[in-house]
Length: 256
Image (tube, rainbow, N blue to C red; front, top):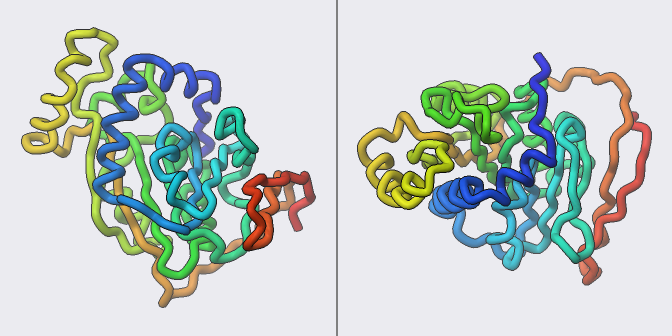
């Protein structure tokens, strides 16, 4: 079943708000507990991951922001050559085994076919490649409140996410949680967020706003690939290795 993406305008407005900035800080800290540095690796952010990509961009060999067609796209990084591409999450415009890491934020909960999306990520990840998924927690308050992007799409339990990863040939690894403070615009609540995050992680982790799981590409089992209907996709062309420019040239082609 198709789940409507949150519009790119709404996503940007949320992350420019005080509540959005506080949420970004909490989720970024949780991601940082799973990924530290990734020197000379190729990283793709899928969904609306740009608020979380900046901390990694200085270390990576390349960093791309892939934004689903149903969501819309914006230029990123701001005032630099664009590393953004508008994509279909089931047909990523990348060669096989070409990416070292994928960060999914505001992505999986909107996927028309989560299994097909995960199979496509498996295809583009290099052997030993790693994936981090951030999804709304179905037990958390944030999934029930529609004034934030985490209240849209399909929320997941930890068991559901783990099962999906195993079904699509990933080995789940370390995990974390974030957003234990309520999604309130109250300045008093926002001032208490650090304490709520700290106590929530210790006392009631099952009620976090988001679940964050790292997984590694598994190589010893084949996956059946179903035939797909032809459709138009935007393909970013990667510059040859050794060329200093990081610009992506996008061309519209007909998928075979």
